[in-house]
Amino acid sequence: MEQLVTSLDNPSPAPSRTAHQQLQTESRDSAAPRRARRTRRALALTALLAAGTLSLTACGGDAEAGQGDGKNGQAGADAAAAKDASDAKIQVSSKDGATNASINDTGVKVTGGKLTDVKLTAVDTGKDVAGAISPDGTSWKPGAQLDRGAKYKIVANAKDAKGRPATENATFTTVSSSHSFIGSFTPDNGKTVGVGMPVSFNFDKPIVNQKDVRSHITVTSSSGQKVVGHWFGNQRLDFRPEDYWKAGSKVTMKIDLDGVKGGPGITGVQSKTVSFTIGRSQVSTVDMDTQTMTVKQDGKVIKSIPISGGSPDHPTYNGQMVISEKFEQTRMDGSTVGFGGEYDIKDVPHAMRLSSSGTFIHGNYWGSSSIFGRTGTSHGCVGLEDNKGGGGDTPAKWFYDNSLIGDVVIVKNSKDKTVQPDNGLNGWNMSWSAWTAGSDS
Image (cartoon, rainbow, N blue to C red; front, side, top):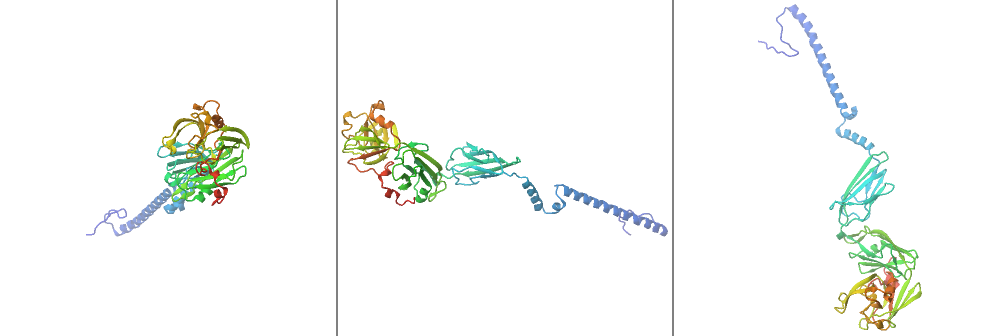
């Protein structure tokens, strides 16, 4: 028996017909399926076109972009976004992730725009570091030197001329104390000092690359005097001219040690300029034969003062000594300078240091007035008549009031040796040829 199959193109068979009826029916029925197929093809094409239209308009691209691969399409979108990016280009001096950033030159610069705000934060403490944007808006600097071995985060924002924003972020760690060196120095910026005052550096670590470190510190004088540096050991570097500074001159010290290698594993972190002024010239000469000090200012004698120097058992050093510290009152304990318990005076007035080993010129209220100008009684210091508490019009008070840090006190005719050049700020006791030996200045 013949199987009957029905479908959209093969409907259920009609009842039996005659040959003529069958012919007419086939003629009519053969056209219907063709029309139906054409209709279905048209609908299918319409549907495909509609789907294509949706795919083209979904991301707003063109036909070529829609037909290309995904990477090209994203590249086009990135390029379009880049065309509208801010012209402001921000640069942070310390690179993101740096572990040896400078503590001096951290800052921000911008081109093609102006900074709107900058925030620098110490990561460990959360404390913000104050700073200021320059008047023209193109740079920012912190208001203080950063700590060594500390982690910081910086966020900088800017806008270009069209108001389009830009941001830069960086997190960095400054060079650690163990991998850096720093030098404490005297005199301080802005001070007025005497004609004998050297520039003296004391570094916190031994310096191996001494020539390189010395070349990155320059000291110049408005007087035109040539200034040369000299190393005492591997941690102290002093600068001076051949003769005392010219009175009234201005001395400028430029420290450019940031990033300079001091030796294996240590880098400099200082970058600053310091200037100080040389005051009037005062040079005082102590004659141990006469137990008298003659004070000269600008080459003229202005006062003669009786003194009591070191005793025969404890003579005072000879040589040129520079006042390095002044104390209206201080304690002098013999045990701190190798004299055991021989003396411990807790209120010595008008004391001025002449050597690191403990030589002072100071007021003496405990000695009889008869000793001054006649005999040496001290343990190596130079004593001037004074009152307990430092009051009154005494020779010690006058000399204290009329002396500057950096003034020179010369001792002669003592039975002791000459003070060593590195014992205090006393490099004047070294000849110029010895001072400049090995120098490239």
